[in-house]
Image: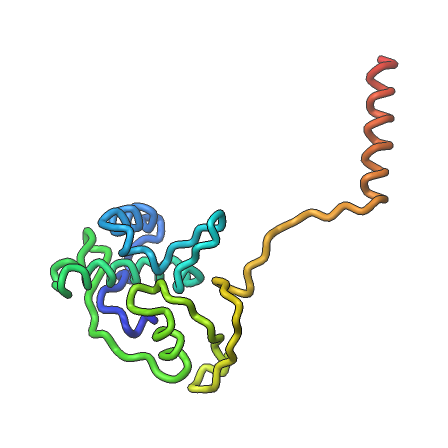
Length: 162
């Protein structure tokens, strides 16, 4: 994806500034950041929502510049961005980007081959943002629950005796 962008985050930009920069560029219109949106409540994920913050911010910068008729002067953001020539994606990556669409809101139904080259990609009917996302959880068995209850009873008895 990064090869196809025309306005990217400068390497010298402090990641501490990213929040302000996201607020600025996404504040110019909902469509600019639609491709990187991630909302677990509604289950809405942009095709690039799984990318790292530098890639997402660069995507948003490029979307804004596209909306400004590719005016290079629109790619500044207080010195945090720079223009570059857009390259083309090759191999399996180009197919994934094609499915994502120009705005990054399309449904990607293929998975990268993982070979790093132009390999075949597997298809799936699932519609999800990323397969490696896990939700932290705590599991308690009957032994742990029983131990907590015994501990609570002993603590309560001790408080009454005092």
